[in-house]
Image (cartoon, rainbow, N blue to C red; front, top):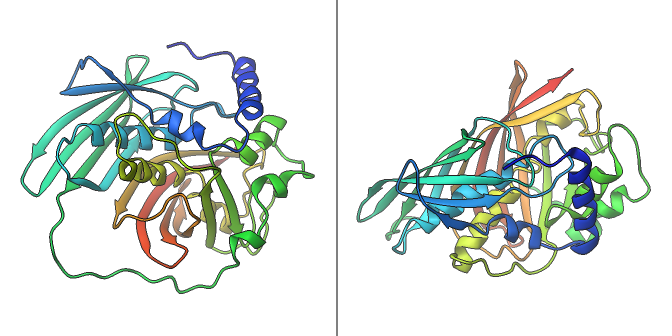
Length: 316
């Protein structure tokens, strides 16, 4: 599928912001997959990347869409417990990606899938997903040790950006940060859109919540949709601890970033329609790359999932 001209993409984005302001429908549209005839492996699906004001599609689209493709290939009650991804090439915006699923193993307790995403005849994404039937055993969960402000006391991205401008932020990127990501995001200590709001430390937290209740998605149970929501939203802010400690806001005209690889573990189910606290830390930064870790907690402190992601962080 051809890439639309940049001006056409921005026009669609602006119209999208007008038509679907502060809605989670952008996310559920992204993870609505269409079955296709497989060309390489056992099963195939197509999905469309969502509008965004960047030169390339959002990486969380690819992770969530691949997760859905893998989940739709598992026909028993096993649940995804881990996923490991590599981003091979940039994805075109508003274009179809073909996801091919290879059924590597179906055992009594565990199943494994490989997923490859193709666009313009080339692989752009590869991932492995593992599924578990679950069994009785001991239990332990990391605890939330820090005290953070209630999300109701913090500004939304739209409130924060309303009277601000500067750097490389355009009206399109301002609209996207404010309302185009399906989730309300509220930073502690403050955002890194235009400047580093707060101390330049390797740590931050972000409250996240869908703008409205998540819609049903064809081919998915509610718990599978909610798992895909975590895979989708985790990529938006996971590079920010490194940006924060290096003093690089998103709107720095010299900044270029890209997701390189991504790993995620799903420990237990929880209410995705309520506020989740996404606690994030920079692990290492050097040679133009930054590794960051994140953990999702419910409001009552239950640890739902863990994320590790390395990204390219380049200044030109």
